Image (cartoon, rainbow, N blue to C red; front, side):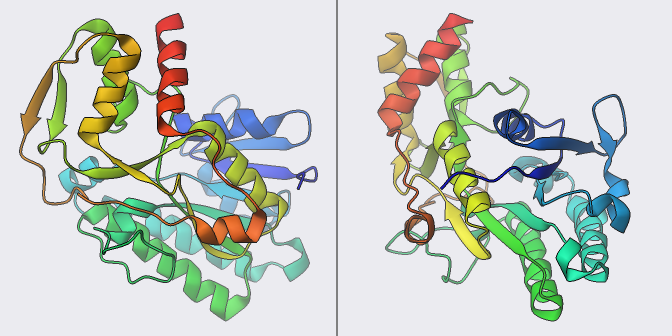
Length: 300
């Protein structure tokens, strides 16, 4: 289903994933406004979203702004309760104060693996109990619960997306997340790739074009509730690295370290709910996605 022209606000606008989303939705159909913690040319201040007059200028808010990654959340315990949860609380309060017809839809970007914790004997469904093993997952779950409470109390229009691991687009080498781009970088430069654990951990990797097409469907169908946005199949870290080595036709030097207790070892996400609601299905298998990512990386 095509997406009608929308006025879309994107928070966390300086982040690489937010930039990817904004670039995809920007032209020609949609009007995109970026928000960040500090205003600058091209970016509005995040705090202005607590003004109902500002919010009335949006049809949809993609809320990607977040202070931490799984690793940094452990380094700075409580950072989300200091910044992210209070901001979300105020944003939801402002939405609740607006006339229902003026309220934009809030699409909250959560984290599939971190929120669920380790999968049971099958991939996690949206109605499964969540058992996060780290501070990052607990903070994202607290945000989800805050949203659910406000939806129940005020009838807000909200979508929570439990996203797996998008890949296939550039990320900074300093970012402590993103196995595939880091493996590509190390394979090309000859640097050593540091791994947590022995490489047996299972993760779900979603090629970025499938991520964006899934997001299009969420907006077009105006979905409410919680949805896994994932490839629907997981692969062990060793298999992923082997595929990168095959594409680059060279080995990658590896350095193993003990897996931290907060890293989810077995992340598997069922995407059937989103597929049933919209007809969306991922189109790019892992091997093809890595082939495309490798071609793009080596072309730079």
